[in-house]
Image 1 (cartoon, one colour):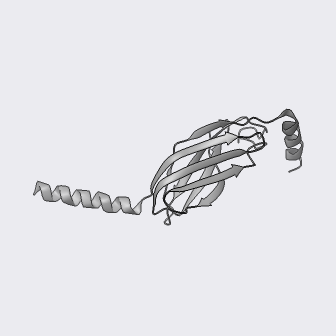
Image 2: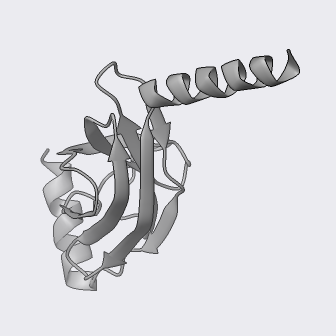
Image 3: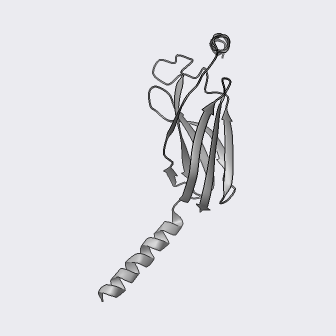
Amino acid sequence: MTRRLLTIAVLLVTTLAAYGVQVTIQYFNAKSNGNSISLEWKSTSESNLMQYEIERAGEDNQFRYVATVQARGSNTVYSYRDDEAFGKGDGNDGSVARNYFTYRLKMVTPDRSASYSSTIGVTHNVSGIKRTWGMIKEMFR
């Protein structure tokens, strides 16, 4: 009887897991090149995954949607260039030119359930000229 209950429990957990997000991320990196922030990650396993949603947080630690990348299957290297990181307010005071950002991946299934990757941080090294020009452009948006 105990063995039968254990088998049923294992089958139930396996069945429920099949409907959730099942993704294994081998690595998730971020790098600033002075103009933008490049994100790269590799999935070694993807099951029941529709898309990745990239989220970014500034100094207020509130994650906000940045972009969507469609899932392409297991063993895929994904990349995204965040050209909008510079000059974006972080939600507290709307100021510009933050230097440190945190990113995470929201992994979304076809039924819109989701799970999140671990977070990564990056210091955005922006030149003084670009910083000044970015502030001027942001004033007119």
